[in-house]
Length: 399
Image (cartoon, rainbow, N blue to C red; front, side, top):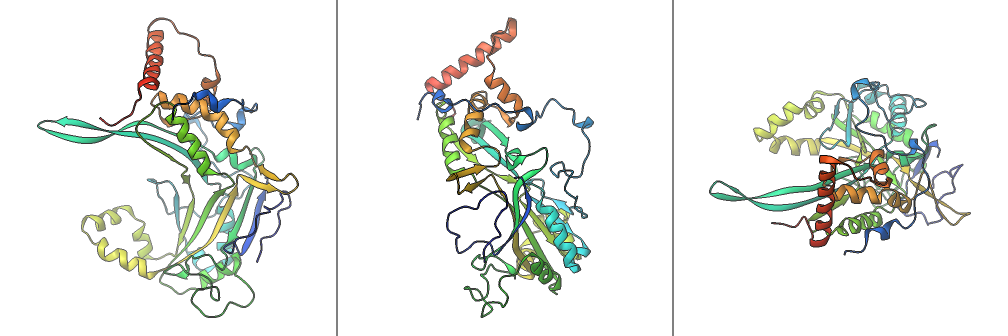
């Protein structure tokens, strides 16, 4: 079964893979050492201040308004449920437990649609490390030293018009050939398409409403439904290669990692029971780890929990325009983003930065730096000299 056509953007001319979603529901229509300068031949187009990431250091957080979810636009209804637990370490999963979600399929469907409107937070993460041998008394230790660790948020690029909340996102359900858990313990394809259960189901593949009814009708003692938020439309592999080449152009010789993590990418809904509340309580989890009881509890939870991994929200950075014969971007292309951020990333790497890059880094990268006077000038000259030495002899290697 195909997806309904989008009213504002033409679908991609590429053939639909066999694993394509069986149901797609539109939520909201908005849509090694070459010269470093070689990557920035084309100046990026002039951008308005609201198109750039915010300054993370200029605003007092205590004065900022407190909201339930700052990424949820005012035009979107807030969820009527609160997270039971957030995975703060990875910042990619929210867990919900609510009795109404267990027995009311209409309420469950409504909350899934609302949660699907909350955008994921795609990031660019560039990290460089090396190892050093450090003397500790009468013995030597091998330690990992961080040379730089910078991140850039891409969430604003999901919106065609962020002031009005216009984005290209849709709520989808899995297709018959997708190997996922469909109220089962192990991943499987749909019945009749290579999965267990015999012949194919009458009436086609289940849509979102049907999956919600099946979840609520299940009498399993432990069950979970997952909503995944996916970011598509960019060639992240090619962009990662270009960013790695950019960093290596500084003559960096350490271990380099360029990744594109997505924060807030998963929502997991558990049925309301004591076992599920315990499994999401941190001190109980740590107790089971220290007493080694997890060796018994982990297989039990794995085999007892029936899971539905059948729903996902797709946020598109680009769509194929059949008339123009090329991709149409919600905000900007990978090339334009690279030209915009390349110089700022280059400067941050040489400065051994650790943290988030924002609008201020873009402004400083494009500004003509005037030599300072006094002690500040000496420090500025020293930093510039270190950069020249690094580019000449290499830096960040193991020692």
